[in-house]
Length: 455
Image (cartoon, rainbow, N blue to C red; front, side, top):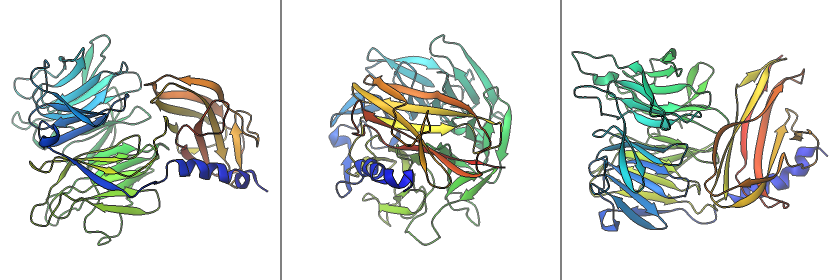
């Protein structure tokens, strides 16, 4: 009996630990529940599990243990038109905005952060804010893209927006994203641009624009904008296959709406997409094989409500921010059992040859103080499952007794580096998961990434 067959029950056990335990239900939050504004434009889950809620007009809220806290003009340099939210290496919350640039929260006060100097457009950080593996923060402004080191305060502009009569118009960068290879993606002038951190353009995709995300296995996904052209270029979800984006959208007419922008990835690797534009709105969930559609309760044919913000939290619940003044914030509670540890795994390429070096990178986030063991396994093209580092058939912890304090957030840790020998050609897959130390009780999701060995 092959090793994979013997381990199927254990893999199923882990799968069941994040399986649905209740029927999904929608939960709504409005100004009556404490929201500053019902125009919700940004969502972010902090390391402590709280959810930060950015609004278009009036500041931020924080959802903590069922309560909504308010961060308004009395808390320092509060941004009023929030476009994006992230954290830095120290765990401080940062927000990009149209009126204050990129600001951060420290000692219960919002402090001035960074922006590009310009007579009018300099503080407009509509393009987003992202943290790179090296700890630098990247901001997309109307007039360009810059990085900022929050530890030293040093920063530099690396890309300038082409101006037309002094106006950035459609060329301003939008939907800034940094992938696991440290490449920077953004939309500009109705095309996607891939750039290195020195500002050199790696590639442009003139026929695609929208928002980029990356799944735990390193796959790049694009949630396309709905384009107001004649004929219209409808929204959709694409997967990067080599140097081309290939559509993975459901067949036209399958659902009342089309997936597209905004787009996110769950801890388990599901692709979550909203539908933006006029007509029916809904939430789409793609598990790599099939699409699932959830119609939003806040939409109606007479009053279409575009989705402005989307987030999948560590539990797997889907948070949805709308731009309608009386619809507010919605959460699709999917009844998923929460894991104490979230794990993501990636490698530095999709295809390898004899003698190539494979680097495997690990992201770990822990919500409680626990001691866990990390297991790493590889599935061979024939289906057998072997465990690293011994590559034997038995379970052996790679990091026995690994301690993960509450709030642990490790991104891009190089787990190992291998020079590949002559192995059978085909598709391989790495797996990583954590158990509570000394037990076989899973403490995390199962993370995986796929790659190919080519002769």
